[in-house]
Length: 237
Ligand code: BT5
Image (cartoon, rainbow, N blue to C red; front, side):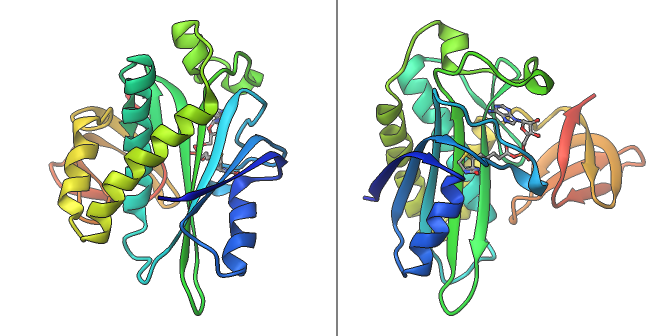
């Protein structure tokens, strides 16, 4: 199991995890009650007021090629933990979100550190008892409290997420990637939907028909051809 290090305030749990990695420490979890500079992908902000769960799982990996699977594992672990705690049915949205009732309740930020040793930081932000969000995300974010009108023990949730993560991580270690994709598909909000993908190379509209063995999203675009989406954001259309 992972050792948990808890802090009141951090700039970002992913930053703190880097400090541990620099000391050669891993298989641990950094948790903070709030973050001053919580971040998302592409340098975006992650709203990190108190009431939320902010945690980073720090792992050592020989091979970073499959690190995207750790994002899937984290998102599925959150869905499973939420279900056990609140009965809510979360869904995973490609590539790194968990939605409840079509609103974002959790985001995952996986960052790698490569050098003599390679590390992966799997950052998880989950809105738990949060009631307020910045204006720009007010209509698209939700929390466990907003959905159920109950207050949750954040520590208990982090432990449940870690347990679920650990179970799936065993499959990762055994290179049983199919199992991970299979579980992710079971909770997918994305597959089967007509979506628009915004990527650095352009925008693509098509039906999300699957994910390949590198966690890329596969779209069937209008001319019937398949388009692989490696990174970006997707929107249902
Ligand atoms: C993510 O990025 O969703 C990854 C978020 C990861 C946060 C965790 S917290 C622990 C660890 N430490 C960190 O510093 N980060 C990780 P992305 O897919 O780029 O989505 C970012 C977008 O989500 C923002 O641009 C907003 O639109 C929206 N957003 C920001 N804060 C949110 C919140 N608390 N709840 C829901 N949506 C939010």
